[in-house]
Image 1: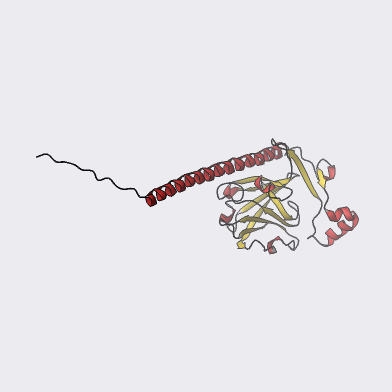
Image 2: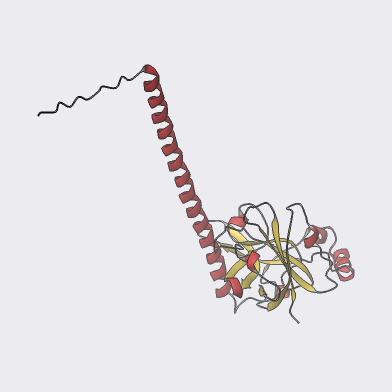
Length: 247
């Protein structure tokens, strides 16, 4: 007995056609947005790798010159004078002797990178536990923070006072991403431009709001301290790691 198969033709209403067009349009827009987001991510990673490469260039220059760096007194380094010194050098020197919280003249070395820009750096920071090894740039800005660790505030490397260092948290292995994992007793090494390296021991780790500047104080009772600053993973707070010269 033969079976007759009848296919029922579905009547497509104008409303159904309109919805299909809308869904198709939304699908195309979604794919386009995904392509844009993916392209932005790829470019951001490329940009980060490029900036990280510049940091490595500066560090290599610092290490190559390690045996030939001379002291500031020998005038072989570019010396940048803070505003207080420019106003009155003698008065400034007297003030710094009486009040260590005032910054002294900062010695910097310069390096012209492959991107054609010149970067001033003041030393090197090494944190063995988390594999950090970067040059310390002399100033802080949005662009410089993309390149390496920056001096945010305070004393010069390995001098009395509180050297505050800021670094991006890229939530990977770059810059200060792993700084939040540091604990009391861990070691942070700072090398200045004279080639002197001092070990600093972590004595406190905590978080603060971005507007809180209490940890940048220069009142250290005549001791040498280092403060590491980076963002939490959600970028809502700042991770503060306090270090003091190891006895």
